[in-house]
Each structure stands twice: as structure tokens, then as C-alpha cells.
View 1 (cartoon, rainbow, N blue to C red):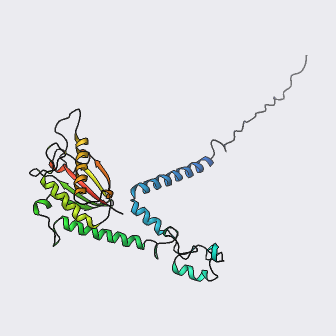
View 2: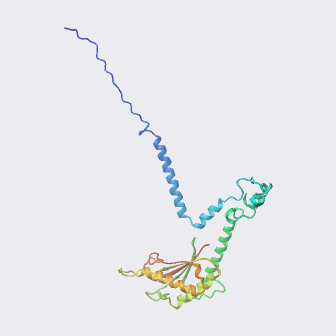
View 3: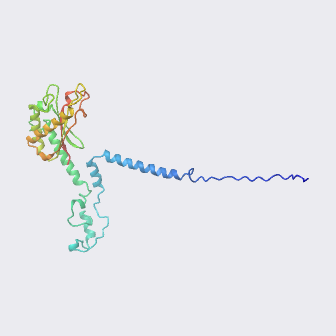
Length: 279
């Protein structure tokens, strides 16, 4: 018979250590924040490209176009290699052509002192020509031959796209025979006048046809075909009136999708838009 020992048994407890630097760490948060910031910058860039016009984007590009060379050191040489003399460093920054050639192309040199001077002058000249056309069409010019009956069918406005000239119907005066693309005498006189007034500029022209909605829903809605037919008839009359055919860049039928009046069946929605596009 053996004696029992009073010594307590030794218990070894092993603790399992799990690393927390992987899934539960904070490094992934930094990477995710960088990703979200990059995506925000990307979508902001896409929004800016969509919200600005072609003219505004060109102005921004011209603004950042350098007017002095980044490096004022010339490669030297002359003759067939079209190099520059040792005095290039003093001459080039003064005439604004950088370190290219003495007679550079428009694409390889800055436009004026700030890069946007020529563009701004062209825009001002274009705006002045638009204002003059508006005055003649609205009968405000001293030599205008627009009658009161014709002027009440004309609305003009200047947008980023260009000068828009709208010829619209009223309840008591139609421009086309009802339901057809055949213009009446008033419309023919209006288009001859527009062709004569706009002959002073060389801007391209976009023509759009708009019609009012039909009072009932029908299977074969004629608004698409009718709006395009009226726009095409306008093109033919403008060319007959003296407008060069190469100036007309597009002819579009908008049906009743771009209404000018809240009432979709109002006569005001029957109209032709003639846009002098910006250069």
C-alpha cells in the first residue's frame, strides 16, 4: 500500500495568440481611403468635362499653354538642322516662340502674350456679329425691313452653342399647312429674310424641327416624321434664299420632345430653330 502524495497536480494552460495585424488591423483603412479619394477625383473630372463647353475647355487649355520656353538653353547649330544661335537665350523669351523655330506653326507656339488673346478677340467679334443679326431680325435696326407681322414670329437668344433663331406659329397665324411640311407665304418670307441677314457671317448652321403633341394617342405617331420633314423643307428654302449648302451641318427632327410651352398641344410648340453655331 503506497502513500498518497499531497502535492497538487501541475496544470499548464496554453494561450492561443491570434495575430491582429491582418484582418483586424488598420492598414486596409488607409488603402480604402486612398481608393475613395481617387474615385472621387475621377468622377469630379468626368463631371467637369461634361459640364463645360468646348469653348471653355479650349480656353482652359490655352491658359496653361506656356508662352516662354521651359528650358532656355538652345541646342546650337544652324542651317539644315534648324538650330539656333548662341543668342537664342535672350531672343526666344521676348518674342514668345519658345525654343522651337523662328517661324513656328500655330500648333507649336502660344497664342499671344497670355495664350488666350486671339481666342478672346474672336469671341468678341462673334458676339458682336450675333448682336447685329439679332437687331436686324427683331426689327430694331434702322435699316431693318422686318415687318411687325413677321417680327412677332421670331425669337432669338445667344447660348454656348451659338445664336438660336426660332420661327414659331401662333394660334391665328400658321407657318405650315396643318399636318404637312408645306410652308405658307409667311414662312417663305421669313426664311428668305433669315438667309439674307445671316449671309454676313460664315458660321455653320443647324436646323431643328419641333411640333406640338397630338390630342389623342395613335399607333403611328406622325410627330417624328413631320418635324424632320419641316426641318428639311426649311433647309431647302434657306438654300433657295442664298445660303450656301456647305454651311448646313445638321438637320434634325425633335418631334414633341422639346416643348416651348407647358401646354404640349399649344401652337407655340410648332416651330423651327435655326442655330448659327460658334466657330
